[in-house]
Length: 358
Image 1 (spheres, rainbow, N blue to C red):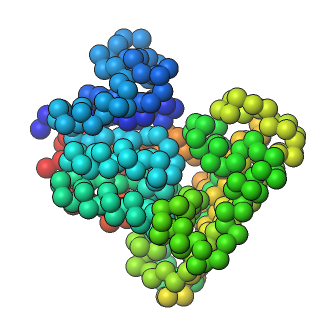
Image 2: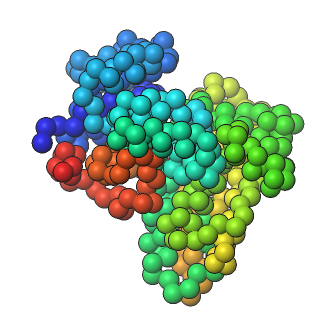
Image 3: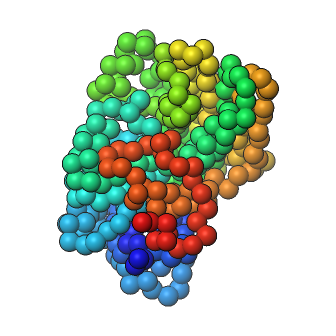
């Protein structure tokens, strides 16, 4: 089989890795798109930090649909925003054109429990055209399959508790802003925390209308429950600010965050199930102080209790490697919006990506 033709949509920080990984896994980037006029027109080699041009120039995102219609593309890699509503149009365009797509958008991991309206829209179109759409990334492995693998070695589970932290500086301005980084506490409460001080009925109305802003763990809990075969009864989330103990510089936001302002947020999601297993997960995303680092800890309680801790994971690289290694599974998966808990566990691709596609 010939090399896989991949299109990069979104040419910011994450694409530096995803594009390089695509080339190094024996595939090729045949097109690249962005909305930023400062990026449009650049050869992708410049974005990746290479000296020799690759001959692929970043085009305006307005040309994306026409390009997909005119060219043979095996999969689109979407690395733009964090909320499903923000990537909906790009993913729908892929679905409409019958082109497979995979995205690092965190909500896209399991969007049916937070934005079913957009999920159904893309799912129906993808099934009609034969495309497969999904979301993946760090959470696919470190908040997903790692935990369900431990569960497979457990006789009885009563509760699953997870806690993970990451530096919003590594993911661009959109993610940092979504976490309330840089806001004074009054503004944080108004724009972030207050959104979750609502009744279950009011939250469900937001979900049904595609207006809900979930934390990352909201979708992770849904993903875990689905893979473990659990029936969700209720789910709630609470967001609280992470507060700067002293002034801290944010290069991503291009500002000095004053002492007492929010450096980001902690979101705790609690899920109860019909089977009696409770899932409590917390993600902490903030601008790090010099002595802070990424960590990931999960405990499966029951018989026996098991805790696994990963300190200083290279979250950006792991996210990008996961998405590139997932490409063959996306191409082979059934048409529609097909979430990764239904796919085989992600594996290292020692051969070129096309060798895994039959």
